[in-house]
Image (cartoon, rainbow, N blue to C red; front, side, top):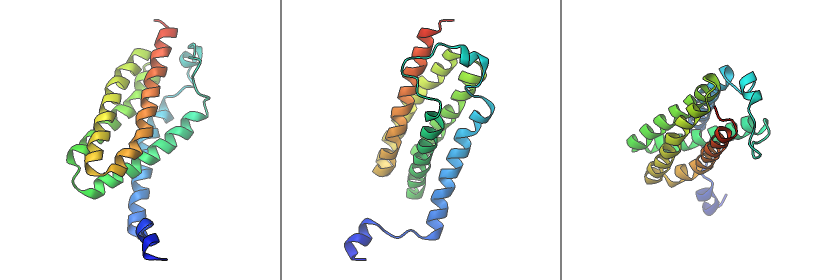
Amino acid sequence: MTNGLRHRFPSIDLRTLIEVVGFVVLVNVLGSAPGVVFGPDSAWFRALEKPWFYPPELAFPVVWTLLFTLLGISLWLVWRADSGGLALGLFVVQFALNVAWTPAFFGLESIVGGIAVLVPLVALVCATVYAFWRVDRRAAVLLVPYLLWVTFALALTLEFWRLNPA
């Protein structure tokens, strides 16, 4: 391989690969755990009027697996930089809110509870993107699809609230 190509596509050693895969698996396991207990299979959720832009059910596990994978890689990049104390702290807080959304919405059967989690989540994801940008721009860019999706989730949840007044 020429030096130019080697610089663009550096080789990845086994330890690095194991670290990245570990971060990806950890984020996917923690992120998807609430969905094992709570989910859209309840009679309450099935009875709700769905917004016209509600995606097909299959979209959710596919999108979340992709997003959690991007989050894992992004988190690894910032962790590896070893200078992301604030960035890592913001990630943990926003991720905890992300994980709390499923029990708040599905577990408590509360649209308002879902909104109460999503509003600060969107703000914290914005702050996390900014903090990651200061540490590793690639890590920040990897969070943009996640920011778009949680913003979409907020719009979707607000529309659930409008269509299903309590």
